[in-house]
Image (cartoon, rainbow, N blue to C red; front, side):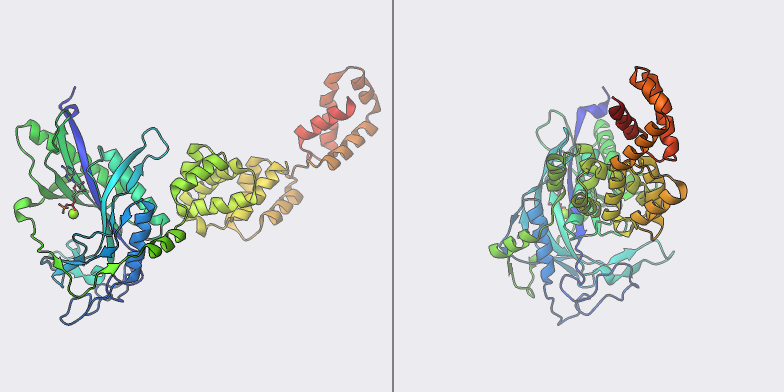
Length: 485
Ligand code: ADP
Ligand code: MG
């Protein structure tokens, strides 16, 4: 047994999600990402004396949406507080946050839903706050640069209980939260652009210990993969320190994406005393029951609900259902598709096969794709009618719809004409071929009827010749045998 097996890992995550509101939390400044630095600012977001913040109601709505989606209790009386500290990217000298009255308490996020690894992680609280500006340290060799466009953008902070027990569970937690905020359309979930950020509180303890170990908090991981790397590093580092007789200090660490290590940013002694006090310029906001119920009615179908619908009502496999619910746009596409075809399994196969492949290859989202649900439904119908086989449908028809402006019907018609690829399987058409075969080959038919069953091959050959290779062989064979028996 390695020393690492003596310990268990305890993780609590704090996720900051930038809300997708058009204007900032307390001013009408735009929240657009990537604007020229320091252009989306105003005296209010810069905190000039005498200016007054005004609450953007959408903040409340978005936080309530999230709270309802995770089954949290939603607080009626919401107060705002100032969290005071000095930093160059915080011209006001404080952030407006919710200190003792977070808008949501409780609720949970489910990890690995519908698998044998399923586990619920309790949410401690979700509160509203505003973002600070951004300090940029890597663009100028001598100076740190400041961009205040982000200052005052609305955030929710989602704090978990220390119930996450591995780096793998932590990555799953973040991807579930990201999926949820995207389904709810309250945050774009883009970690590279910083609209979703995660701080990882990590500690280790001996497996038989009863008290949690001292934790460190690691910041600045800009992808789910890096969250996992940072936690793996931190767990190993902490165990190494403890095994060498050392002790873990409560401290804030930063992640170095180049070598996957974490390093000390500040220790507890340097921790801020934020001197919270009630924000004098904002009145408490009441979130009434009727309002909450109104918002509840506007919630979209969430991944878990969709999973149940797909597996219980459409009889899809868990595997297929999980792939489809991965992104909201794809599940919406699928929901349209299954209104247009009854062949749900084929619908799922088209999404999880050819469609996903083009999306990945061309780096497109499904809404940008030329292929629409109706096209896929028509292709499925062509195959089910035996007009084309799956590989022709995929390599020719689907490809042409993806590339161009032609409709499925047009493409199918052209293909049938030009290349004779269309299979004919209509009973009438095939019956007509069979009659011609019988007419033209009376002797063989007679011998077949007298027991020379091996003549099916010959007769089928004649039939395929008459149909110029277009008859669906399987069906023709069946109908021919029926006719002659
Ligand atoms: P802080 O202001 O110190 O960041 P918060 O309450 O905002 O405190 O967040 C604390 C986070 O640390 C929570 O996610 C909590 O679950 C987590 N946490 C608390 N104790 C431990 C511990 N011993 N090991 C790991 N995580 C912990
Ligand atoms: Mg915190």
